[in-house]
Length: 452
Image 1 (cartoon, helix red, strand yellow):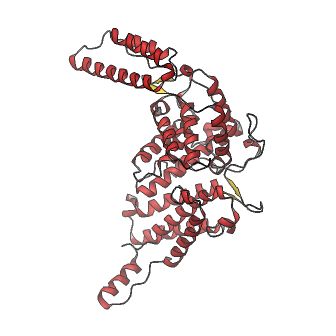
Image 2 (cartoon, rainbow, N blue to C red):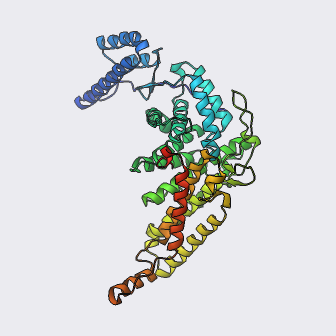
Image 3 (cartoon, rainbow, N blue to C red):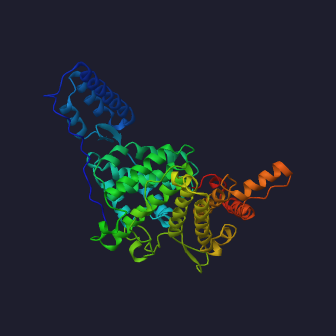
């Protein structure tokens, strides 16, 4: 369903009448205005084909005192490729539509099939409508969404280009209007933009940005009730389904970043009142606007011969639940306060859940078999799945002070010279790592370090 569009209008400045005219306030105001002028000058240099018009506007600003009225008039005028978001000039440029659409179509048939971030028809409608709207009326949130899609396509190496700098460039464009995405009216598209940005940022060695952004994402998702089925009760099935998919993607990121950073997740499992997604071919038919009229099951992978299916999206959600359990067992404050017996029971519970999850994966989608049975474009998604599973296995089976058997064997080695026993399930963990190495070796060379 198409999203309601909002005109991007500059913030109304407070009337200077009645403001305490202290020296400090005046200096702060002047510094802010000087910053605006500097940013305008930079945009003049960037937008050469509109340089003459912008230059005359800037000269007019220099000749007269700049106040909120004159800045507002400048922001709402027709000034080429420059738009204003929160009083800051933003170059809302994009490649030509004929260059963007093929990339978007590949994204919808690959990344978005595995992880249904967008409803195909809605996204394509947004893009076509965006290109028809004049720059001053363009929605910065829609612009950010298009840039996130392009960044994800290039980051996932879906368009045959090894230039990862393009992904960074598009991500930076989306980040330039982050305040409009976060602080403006909250709609589903705002959450989709943020989820896409977290996907792009989570591969960074420093998780700080991702952690801050996922916290914001979850809070805004709560604001519009994505975690609660009652908030979608009056919507049609397609819209309700898309809201649920976006929430579960945020959930996956939240639990994964929590385990990796050893910090609590934002979303409490007890506060989630949603069913797991199920396939719905008719809901995701990609129609019109030049995309092939074929059925797409969101989140469902099929072997090359078409004989075996696996719901990849649901499998990722189930693994995210287990990641939350791993954090709770290893790193939570509650875990540190448990008795040895309680810790042992918690370990057995989460270990059984992980083993049950592994057993649910069809043989054709196991790490050593997948390169022979799965489309090469989907292998990197399975690499993420199996590497995350290995991370959980390693953390649960690592040698630590709570493993009484391991500690006893270490003591015997120190006092009696007896070779210590290996941690529980150590051989199985090594085998799983070897299987993952086979899968990673089947990825294209440029993707062996570039999957997430």
